[in-house]
Length: 381
Ligand SMILES: Cc1ncc(COP(=O)(O)O)c(C=O)c1O
Image (cartoon, rainbow, N blue to C red; front, top):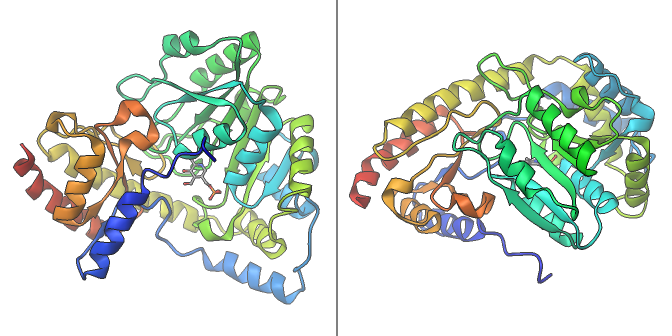
């Protein structure tokens, strides 16, 4: 437990709850989950599965119909996998990642992360006894090829990538993924590619998958799930796609830990992937217009710089010009305006002048919260 740090965001949550209990209005920009309800056809499918008695353990890999649906999901993108042997369904993408880490990494290994990176990766890596190592990216959060090469050593056994990225919204291009794969081949490490935000991409761009770049999956484990694309965070449903050896090892872990993802939830997952997709596009479009507005409002604030996120639902602006640490800044902003953010250093030490804003909230909250922030910021100079 000594290797697991306390959550850096806990203080913010506690402070926000205290303010709310005192009757103050709090604008929640810290939450990492879509604010939309789960589409009704998915809810109905879960209810029907319960009525049909789908309430027992399933195969630890997942129910065959869901494994097939995941295969078809990729096939529509021109990616051919064998659902029955290359996929494991898990209670959330988090569990898929954790099983991947446990089955692949040894204690004492180094695992590289392209920073800024979701804090959970570091914790999982530490639990496995390995050491997380941040690789800096360029100022616009673009891959820094030279920095990556400089961090590779014999003790590196894995690299975590996340595209679209939490917290930056950055996307890795196919060519960049190819370059990463070449390095993995030359230096014998595996790639964990977290693609959970795959459907949330803007400006007409398309998300590239590591599965397109490494179709044999010799080096790659892709993790994805239903939480973000289908607004199903509380259902806990995710999956991993990889080579048969890695997936087989993960199945052995799952058999002896969670057993399987909930049976009726897996049936709902089949409906999510095979049913009407119009709500997925509607949610994506709503996030895109919120992205446009929040970036515009942030960029209008003097001394604030925000790189345009191309995916996911986070903005990660730089507040360096105020000369305050992100923790102090986040706390002052929360106390004075009610706007709750996540201090940037949670995503990498280099980001201690950044704040993460989730725009998984209404345009009204964005207008009001950022309006108050823009009135308050000049007083910090
Ligand atoms: C980058 C990233 N990966 C994975 C997850 C977790 O996904 P799930 O809800 O499927 O466990 C999150 C949730 O915040 C995330 O931001």
